[in-house]
Figure 1: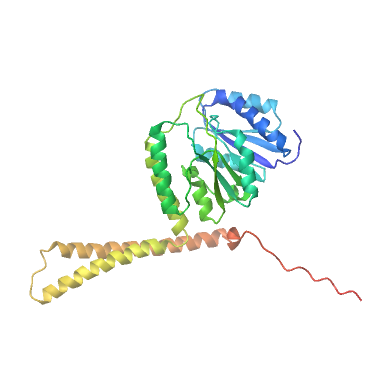
Figure 2: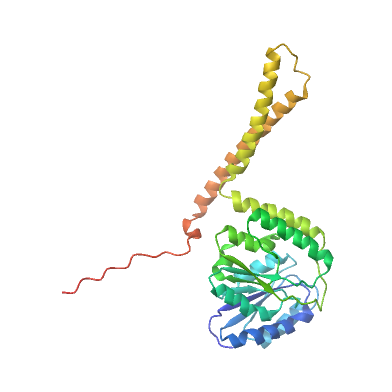
Length: 325
């Protein structure tokens, strides 16, 4: 393996996958070496309780293009990916799960798709080798997220993805937001594509996903939706809700005022309580929106958030050469 700065970084989150690590590296080497491009494999041990770290240590000693990052405990896949991204040196970053269900033979196709002008290419497990109890909720989840976010992908959570390096450097992921990396990238203006990939049956270990994963995923999606649409204009959300509620409350109070002027008693009517409540809650939402705007403005000024974050390319004027005499 040459000592050039790697062009391709393969990030592999690992949690209790000791039996699959060496076969995975061998498959990666068989696929990537013939490409003639320098590459590195970054294995992130996310608090494994088996002998995964020992297996990774042996890999590191045997190969000069292997990095091993060991987290203090199991922080989750998002933290493992974020750690791998920070240690990636390549111009292109590819993520792949360590359980051997993702096929490394698909990596050249992902790279070719990137070369067509995309910034992120997400795999789509068209023939998914998982139980029906996982496939059906996953389809519903992907359909709902696609409809709300505007990014229609069949498989948001496929572990096999290829990114340009600036994409992963500009995305901050935490909690369980790794499921929504294509949505986060799409919100930042990056070009996202999807490619059907081979999905293999699980040979080692067991799946750690349960039904609660989809509930957490829905809550995480609300976070992504809010951050993508209202992060820089929170008053549009809270102020809109506040004005709507206050408006409805005001209409109710005006109606009750008309009845009162007509001589009807209104003190016992539930509408009076509802009207006052809606006005008060509406004002609170509006005030929350104003405070959020102040916090957002202060945060951006303090951190010097530049418009260049959204700039893809600048064509500067060419210097004029002095005319020859």
